[in-house]
Length: 139
Image (cartoon, rainbow, N blue to C red; front, side, top):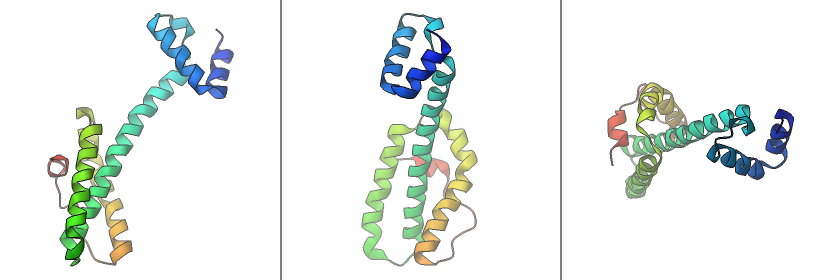
């Protein structure tokens, strides 16, 4: 199979392309693999999982900020339940190798949460994340 045919299948029938790639991998037919697109897809899978975890982490921080810095006690129970749901989602998606990157990105993730809470409630929040990654990841 030529590079042009492999790429064309990828562009016109993604599902068929995945079937062909799996078959080539199982049969160890390395010449039949669409290496460039296969590499991109694997990288994309990793990014997708990381983005899902960081998004759940941001939502969790957002809700914790609401509990810790707004006087809206009637919503606290709902927000606590949502925080637990975010933690469960993180637990299902996270892998050990994500933790260093999450730690590295924590302040950026925190700032995203701050921007949402500030926009919604117009309150002043700490400049730096008051929560440790360990605490945010614990269930």
